Amino acid sequence: MAMGRALSVAIVGMAGHVIDVEADIALGLPAFTLVGLPDASLTESRDRVRAACANSGHPLPQRRITVNLSPAALPKAGSGFDLAIAVALLTAQAVLDTSVVQNYVHIGELGLNGRARPVRGVLPATLAAVRSGHPDVVVPAANAAEARLVPGARVHAMSTLADLIHLHGGTAAGAPVQAHQPALLQISPRSVPLAESVDDSVDPGDVLVRPRDLAPLRNPVRSGPQPDLSDVIGQTEARQALELAAAGGHHLLLMGPPGTGKTLLASRLPGLLPDLNDDEAVEVTAVHSVAGTLDPQTGLIRRPPFQNPHHTCTVVSMVGGGSGLPHPGAASLAHRGILFLDEAGEFHSQVLDSLRQPLEHGDLVIHRANGSARFPARFLLVLASNPCPCGFAVGKGLDCVCAPVARRRYLSRLSGPLLDRVDLQVDVLPVSRADMAAGDRAESSATVRRRVLAARAIARDRLVGTSWTCNGEISGSYLRGPLRLSPKVTQDVDRALDNGRLSIRGHDRVLRVSWTVADLAGRSEPDRDDVSRALMLRRRGQVSV
Image (cartoon, rainbow, N blue to C red):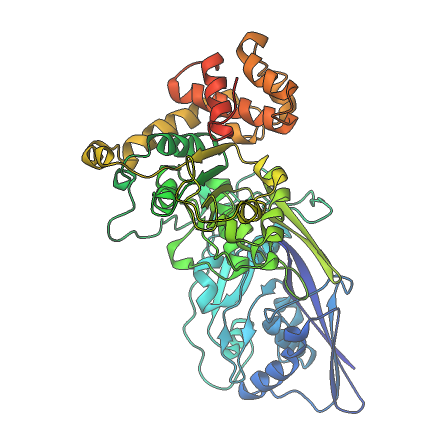
């Protein structure tokens, strides 16, 4: 009997777990058994590894082979264990030295010819390896740029299994391909995890990943003209709501007939938002790495993401899930950015209501039979919708051809509990010829963005010592505690609460918006006009005070 061992990483949600890959080669009938809760793609690694080893000059013996992925109770998915399984089997055959191999973590897929192929989730997997005290990480060459974003990681990029064998001091068929030299980066002494596991447990030895230590820190290259707010003609109130949404992180509903500029307004919102800070950039980049949408050549994602799913999307594609272990959906891909639902009235009601949890808590916990996963999902929700199927039920609705029951059915998809979580609800009315004539005087995105950044800086200074960075995240208890306003200032919103026109959640959200109104105006705290303005914007101008 011969034993071999190697290390790899399993990703569950956004949390990485170091896996001990054990290989046993014993006498008996030829067989290759893989245990430790592997999924279908991982089970198929038996054939990939067997062919890759043979084509690298070290065929597996015709004996009973057992590979165990420990801890066995943790579900494992994907093809990223191929390299570790191959290394464990080669150490069991004494091709490689166990004392050398045990210092490395192996992540990557193998082709039948021994070629190392890229996999998803290399960034969080490398983070987990570094945190566990294993800075030497072996990845396919195509994943090297992504892995090198992690501080403290010594990244060894392999093009083939033969390269890997040569790295560990063995010999293989064919000359080794020149591998990238490992890059050693510095680790900050503080200790904060990137993502939490489902039970919120954190190892005391976790190492903080501080993006300021990452190299390179490059932003995506932008080419061509960027969408600008000056392209929007008229729509003064909607533009102001857009500025408030960007300054305070408030959710927004744009309601109006076709062709009034709802989609145009929403597409200009990303240009008003500030760049992501270091910790936010790591979170967002890790989510996109797990989802397989990351371009590692651009470095960390520094701009807030913008997700615009089609109205035919399913609940799983919106919040995440899928067979086996869950994967992130559009809500998580929009983390720290914008989730724009165009034609919101056309979305299935279950899809819209599935957003209640992330709107309230900023994350998603998805439970499946094989395990659970937590994904971050703190986004700015922007809804754009027509008021009815034909789209012309505005004003007196004289041009609308829809039956009253059709109007009610159309808007009923935007349920009360969902709208109760939307801070700003604005009517976007048709543009007049006078608005078109004054279009050249519209403010640009750069001008508005400067005000947004100044307002965010004021809010950030006010919220020092808390976990919040903008007004849209403040809890109700904090609003009624350290940020409590006088009854004279809040009398209008208090009256709306007493009359049943607002819930307690709506009451808190109006106060959050009022703080943003005051920040944009440069006032130290809201006055009665600020609170009234926030109240009117919440109910699309239809709440009487």
